[in-house]
Length: 319
Image (cartoon, rainbow, N blue to C red; front, side):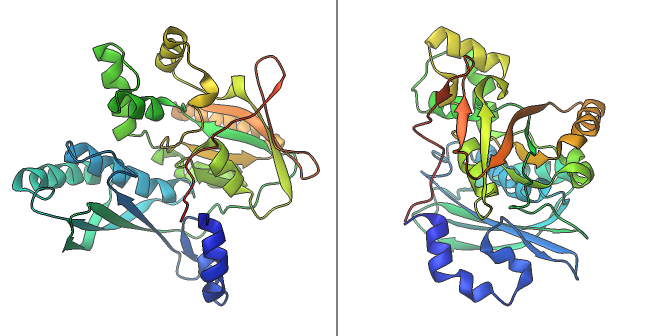
């Protein structure tokens, strides 16, 4: 059973009288009258991170992916709660010192504050993060318009390359290895965009499960389709280099997830202000496709104008 099938079948009816739940079809809770925005995420070793050999980096990855849920909605994250389940080995004195130091660094970087949490004993390591912000307005899912342009910030694929390197599936030189591993553990977020996104984005999501997977979530309750252009999907020069050297395909890297870039749609009339805004902030932005009529099947067009199929759309939450 897939994630949304499970939610719709067993839990959606429990939220019918609660507008703030957004039908359990978004990454946040939004109480407009109280200007309250909340997100919660759970991370399990072996699924969301490989191991806990680098607790200082794992905890940063977790915090950034959590506050990303609010940032992509045009909301400034302010408070967070963290709960951890582990044992004496995972929560050793050394690990706890590194976790504490990293949390302090992330708090200073993103101006967020720890407010509480919980700890329990378990031989399966996991963390849960609750993030809170306040806003009069947010950018919800399922508000795309026919003809909207599709945009993405930053580059895609570096994190997946880092994961492949950590799993020893790709062997490259030391400097490149360090770059990609850092991209896996330390995704680049864009808090400078928080106020700006509300000016032009019709709908938005952060890319956690993968470009295609998250795009389909973004419009999953609308009778709309999409067209993406593979050559327009941005990747770093470092990734271009290893794709050429290792004879790997771009399509197999850009939709694997863990990028935490912002994916959004906007009316064509907003293209100039979008370009100007991103240029002034020094943030990379790419127009990668458009929202189409539901009568047209979703498609990805390669550099030669041919339709291609992605065998893997990204991470699927299956039960």
